[in-house]
Image 1 (cartoon, rainbow, N blue to C red):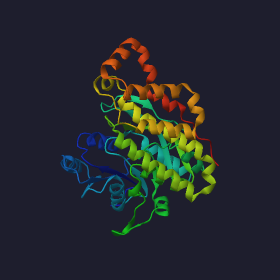
Image 2 (cartoon, rainbow, N blue to C red; image 1 turned 180 degrees about the horizontal axis):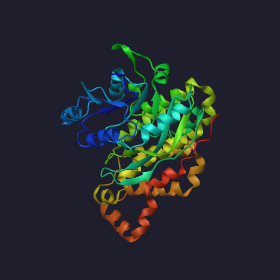
Image 3 (cartoon, rainbow, N blue to C red; image 1 turned 135 degrees about the horizontal axis):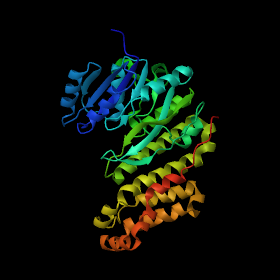
Image 4 (cartoon, one colour; image 1 turned 60 degrees about the vertical axis):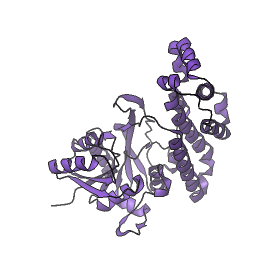
Amino acid sequence: MPNPAISVIIPAYNAAATLSQTIASVLAQTDPDFEIVVVDDGSIDQTWDCLQAWAARDARVRPFRFANGGQAIARNRGLAQARGQWIAFLDADDWWTPDKLAAQKAALAANPQAALAYSWTDYVDDRATFSHRGSYVSLEGALLPALLQLNFLENGSNPLIRRSALAAVGWPNPADPRPIAPFDPTLVPSEDWDLWLRLAARFPLVCVPRVQVLYRMAAGSQSANVARIARSGLACLRQTIAQHPHLAIHGPIAFGNFYKYLLYKYLAPRLDAVTLRLNPPDRQGLLGWQLGWHLLGHDPAFGRSPGAVKALLGLLLIGLCSPRLRANLLDRLGSRARWVNPQSLLGYIRRPSGPH
């Protein structure tokens, strides 16, 4: 049988609860010429049993099992097994609209110089209920400066990529002489942004301007996760600017946008109404204040905005007020309590400019 045109690579770790919805969204694609390479990254739940059941139902599902190596290594391992000339990655708790692969493939076919096609993302919660829209950027062409300013691909489940482009920016995997390994495991969880930047440094990008990716936000994000995102994302930004010194002029916007995103990630789970009424003051949580301080250093104008006041109020509620005092304040504010909604921080992220 001929090789499939598209390889969809799904890294899965303890994903039994969400994996079936993810696989079903791929099998529902209007373009059926694909395979699904699923890498069980050392799961200890029922992920492998779930994969075996799907493989028995549809031969396009190809499960592989490895010792745990982390998301970047699992993606690289999946790519080593992939047979398609078009590559798409999909996290095991996200899903696609049925036209996603067909639309992105058509966009790349119409733009033979482009390395990848991306779409828009909407965000959902653990119950698959809509939370908020993504950035909805529609830029095309040479987009390295724009992608440095803002990761408008937003997640690893978004693009369809030419295999030849991945080969051009990847590096040999010493554990296996055959494949390329384009994801850098030292940059998890920002390894996807790093790869998009390396692709954008060499190739044009194209856009399918409609929502085709549904990204599930994990509940209960902790400060340790935000700190990890901060370390890897800042390393990614600094590394890219060091490799392309002409990008330094875009640094203030890039770092300012990233710190706004980090502050949102820190505040969002802690400003939930239920959490505020139950959790004790987070007096040891200096991370939020550090993020705010760095944000003002890169974007002083933000300090004069209503967003800065909202962020300050949120930090005070989290760090200084007792649950009882918070409950009284929330009751007094009523519907106005939404004024401290951390999602408003996303509105202050500066949108990137066009091709350079």
